[in-house]
Length: 343
Image (cartoon, rainbow, N blue to C red; front, side, top):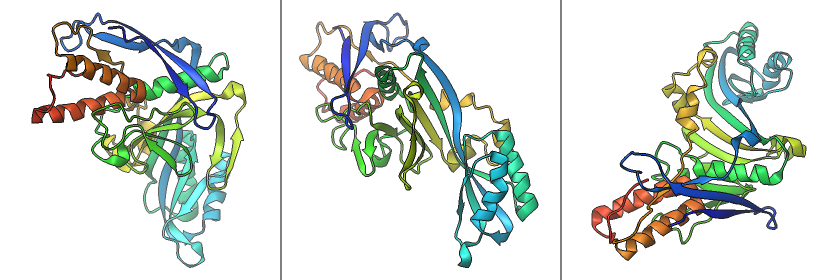
C-alpha cells in the first residue's frame, strides 16, 4: 500500500488559508525486527531551507530578602543591568504591597547577567539564600531562508506531527494534545473517548498553537507560528514581526520539579548546565512506519492500519502513540479482531 499523501493544513484565524504538506513513503531499509519490511512515511521538506536558532526564552527565579520592599525598588536594581524592565511579582505581599519574596522573570537572559543581578540584589536587600530557579522556557526557531508563509506553515505542520514527548501525556486529560487560537478557545486533537479511532479527530490548524502537557505541569510543549514579539496578553500589547522574521517555533517549558530532576536548583547551576543535553530529552522527533503487506491477513487488519495512518495524518505521532496504547489495552480484553503491531 502507498501511504504517500499531501496534507492540507488549514487556518482557523484565516479560514481561507491552506498550506500543502507533502509526504513520501518507502519501504524501510532498517533490519530491526519491529520495523523491517514496513513502510516509513517522511515529510518532503529540506531543513537546509531554514535557519535554526535555539535560545533560553525566559527563566523565572525566586529571591528571598532579609527585609521587606516593594517591586519597583527590585526593578530599579535589576533594570540597569539587563537594559530592560523585567516582570517582578511580590509573593504574599503585606500592607503597602511589600514582601520579602519576589519572583522575577528574565526574558532571553544572558546567564552572566543573572549572576550580576543576584549580586546586586544581595548588596541592596541582603539575600537569605541564592536565587532559586522556578521554571525555564527554551525555544527553537526555524526561519525560512527565503521568507514565505507557506514555508513557515509547513514547518509548523512538521514539528507538531512529528514531536515525540517521551512520557505519558494521555493518562491525565489536561496533558493531552490540543490546540488554541485565542483566549478561552481550545480544542483537543483527540476526543476523550476517541483514542481508538480517528473518526472524531480535530487536526491542529496551521495558525493555531499546538500543545502537549498542562499549563502548570512539569513539562509542556508548544508549537506555533511566531508572528508577534513582546506580547503581553493581559495588557493586550504586542509587536508585529516583519515578514522576513516570521518563523516556526517549538517551545518546551520546564517547571520546578523537572529542573530538580536535571540538578538545576540555583542560578549557578544554570551557568554550568549543558543545554545540549536537552535536545535528546525534550526535542525528540519521530517518523511513523506502517504495514506494507496485507496478503493473507484478516480484512479488519487492513482497516485498522488504514485508520492508524489517518490518525497520523490528523494528529501526528502523539496521536499514533495514544491509539496504540488504547489498542493494547483493548487487546488485553480480547476485543480486537486481530493481533496488533507497534510503531
